[in-house]
Amino acid sequence: MPVATAHDRSLDTARSLWAPVTVRVAWDLVLAGVSVRPDVLSEAREHVLRSLPTGVGAVEAEELASGAVAEWLDRVRHGRYRRPVVDPDLSLPVAASWRRRLAASLDQVGDAVFRLHYGDGFTLEAVARSAALDPSRLEGARGGIRETLRTIAVEEGMSLSGWSVARLDALVGRVARVAEPGCPGPVGLLTDEGRAHADRCPRCSRAVRLVRGGVLSSGDLFAPDGAPVRPADRRRVLALLLHPDGRRHRAALGAALQGRALAVGADAWVIDDTELEAVGELLRGLALEGTPARHHLRGALLAGSGRWQRGRMVGPLPLQAVEAARSRPWGEVMGLGELPTPLPPPPKATRWWLAAAGLVGLAAGVGYLVLRGPQEPPIYPLQTRFASTTDGWDLRFDTDELAVLDVVVRREGRLEVVAHDVQAGKGAWATGEGDYRLHLKGQDALVISSAHGIPALLDRVAEARRAADPVAALQDDIHATDPRAAIAWSGPPG
Image (tube, rainbow, N blue to C red; front, side, top):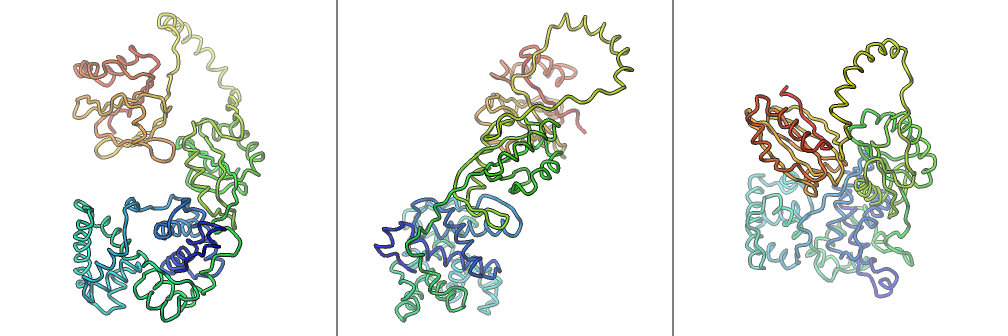
């Protein structure tokens, strides 16, 4: 594939990525059944180039490009904005010598599987049809390729012991796609020398087939003269997130933001900074009505690489902004100031009828409150939603990041502590949507949020087991020990 000249590199060090990325983007679009028109190729390639990390090399850029193309297609086809799937083993070095060694060990059937299935990305069924081969023979050849790669890796000082088949196949695919050094430029690609190189190089083989098939022209492989390959323009957007407990107001919020915000998830929107003033007024009005209240919203204002294009955004900025918003506390929306608290509900006529009954209860209640003293609210409140399952409870909850959490369940009548003094570690329970999720096995479940943890919790649980109602006994004991702890109970088994 084309290699940038010294003059090109002086203009933009990323120019050497243009042709490899163009070929990979075009190939992946064809595999996805997309008609590769010039505008489609241009937008998908721009999205990939904006999304690539700075300083990435051509081989790694090609692999990252495939994930970025799939993510771009998801935006265009379904309006979904999701982080691209990245091979966790991408940092492992893979050389063209691995591909040569592996290919040299294969028979004709194995070569077809290696080049067409692993290298080009065709399904095994498609390879069987195009090569007129028995699928069982192809499956057997695929197993042989995996074992051969294991052997080569060991000889190269890398153990693949314990790797799953899917993980191993991903590495075989990378080996099958790695380019041969010394790729010719666009002019030399279709010469005899270029075609001979393409016979050995997966990248150039794809390029030749795409050019001959009319999907690409040689001109598509030249980086633009005098202009940066990676777009340098930046936008600033606000990512706005809605708390799961406020989802009943999603329709009202979505309607208010219509035409001013881009929905990038079930409970997430991205808003251009030119709309902040208008959106701020809308959100303040909704907050006054509590539809949603301010504590069900959070947002982050972020600048990054992105461009608005026909009602969607090209580049990584929407996902980066959403990630930044997830690190903000609920009730805080950057760039909009403090949202108001809900207005009190209007008075109802029925209150006059209830007043007399209230006075009766007041007399008894005053005595109780005097003896009990004033109650302060929990330091770190809990927002929870328990859903009954066949073996226990699915719990979605949210609380302050500084809260210390304890989780207790009752299994077969016996209280058990399943999580103790968890603070920073609760990130392992994060859903990625701003809250947390746990699956708890048992008849009952208690989640306790406190400032410093519950002293001697294990001893208190052991003591509560002796009570007729151990769950109630434990709650009473904790409230007596720490009145400002928050406790959420699943309720009795359903």
